Amino acid sequence: MIKSQSTSCASGRGGSPKLRRNWTRRAFLKLITTSAGVLAPVVRLHSRAKSLWPGARYSSADRDHAIERGLEFIERIASKPEHFSRFGHDLIFCFYTISNTAKNAKLRALAHNLVMRYARQWRHDNPDPPGADSDALFLFAEGAAVADRTLGLDAALKQRVRLAAEPFSVVDFLRFDPGHEPPPKDIPEACSKCNFQNPRGAAICQKCQTPLTFHSPYDIWLDSLIMTHESDSYGIKLGASYPEALQWISRMRPYPPPGNDEQAFDDVAYTVTHIVYTLNDYHTYRLSPAWLPQEFRYLKRNIRVAERYQDWELVGEFMDALRAFGVDESAPEIRDGMSYLLSHQNSDGSWGNMDDDDIYTRYHSTWTAIDGLREYSFHGEGLRSPDLLAIITGRRAILATSNH
Image (cartoon, rainbow, N blue to C red; front, top):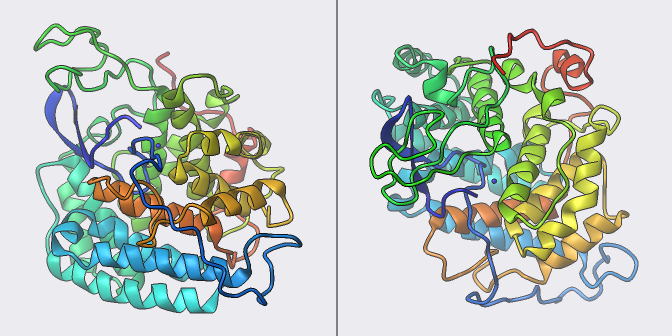
């Protein structure tokens, strides 16, 4: 979900260079390997506990213990002020989604206590929205939305966020206007030599004359789905609405099969998982495979590609996205994924490379592993909005005027 190896990458809007912060569940992550980490497969202390399935190596108690250790690791990250100041908006979203959707009552209670504590901390630390950076404003709005859901509406702060968003255009937020065109192919990545963010369409860096590479349109579309979902959920339009971004789903299908380019696979795979997340409001509703047959097939066919890359982040996302379609431990994809994750948990409770100094990578890989392992208490079958069904099934024509 991997264009940058750090928690901030150089990017910009309208061609002006500035820092672009990592966005929520967006996986701007490096390939995680186990060579530098200390693996601590789950110790089966509960030999008499119920097996996850007949003949399984691990029990339900093993799974619960691994999840709790993972949550404790994320809480240790959140407890450090230097980390919470950068990632607090994302960490409270982690605790909120688990508390809202976990089937296990103990896990739900643990996460609820954490989101209550840290949402208060986030609100205390962030009394006013930033005014000079569209990306920073989006991250602030995400944190404010979680705080509102947890602690109650702060109407005055919401109004200040609305006013702070007014100077920015849709392109400032999304890098394109989904109301008028599909996700484009001509947005350059930051220059590999000087890190300058060139304007759209530039093939040669205007600063140092280095040839440029371009973002995948799936990468651009993915960011727009995340941002518009979060801003719609908060009730403040940051550039465009979620239906405007989602409407290009028919144009983006069919999804290209994995080849030998891991980056291209990541761009498509993370897009598919986030179509699921933004449609079911991050694990709130169960989805019907009949609504999204191409996405469902993609997940089932390609989860083992993520395992082959040893990408804990993506394995967890494939698993929880499949669970959203009603796939459970009776399916080989879920069984293999659970065995894979449970046998690769680190001694500190995390998943991934323990020597990685990228804090976002450390906690986010652990978060998605937890989501891949846990069971969900879905609020029935449905979408975050019934009106979206016509878009994803192709019964609503694209109303935007394409420039391509």
